[in-house]
Length: 124
Length: 110
Image 1 (cartoon, chains in turn brown, purple):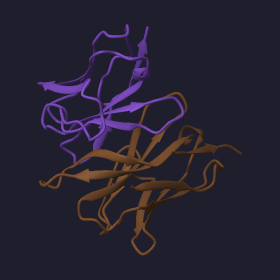
Image 2 (cartoon, chains in turn cyan, purple):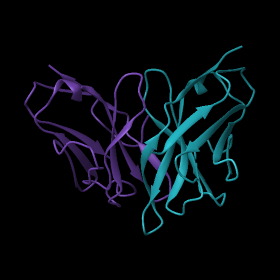
Image 3 (tube, chains in turn orange, red):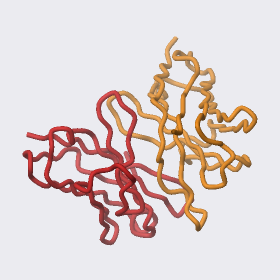
């Protein structure tokens, strides 16, 4: 059974960089059938897609966050990571990592497996 | 403000059916059959309920069904049960090769 687990600091200071890692177990991150993504959810609010990465390193980012986001992959460790720079209180959220299905047409569609999520608070 | 519009809340009694709408544009919902729906209970990660407009993943009850007409997708839950009370989110692929979510709908089972 595929499992994803987020890890990283739960508290980040304003203006600093938020860094999270997602470890994938029970399957290979190098599968040609999937992208891997990050989604966040501010307390009491809805879901926001942050970005996604293929095992080759190809990425797609939410245009509203693109200038501050970097997603990378380490296939040797079966992990992918998120960096969000210049954070403010508005970046306080539960951050989820998830697997993203690719159709035969190369289109990313649904998130079929999710991590449990990790709360990151931005505060001094 | 979310790109996809959902009602903030819907409610129904046990055994009834409810429908949640998700309205976008021709650049997302209307342009592709890549709409998915997620169920989220408090404090839990979202769970995929419907993918590619109307397909159910293995293990999801057939009381859940999806459809689409024009720029609006819909999730219907029939035979409402107490355990269906949760937040529901739609998501769509877009013409910019990105993904977007709806604002979410809180389902209350009366």
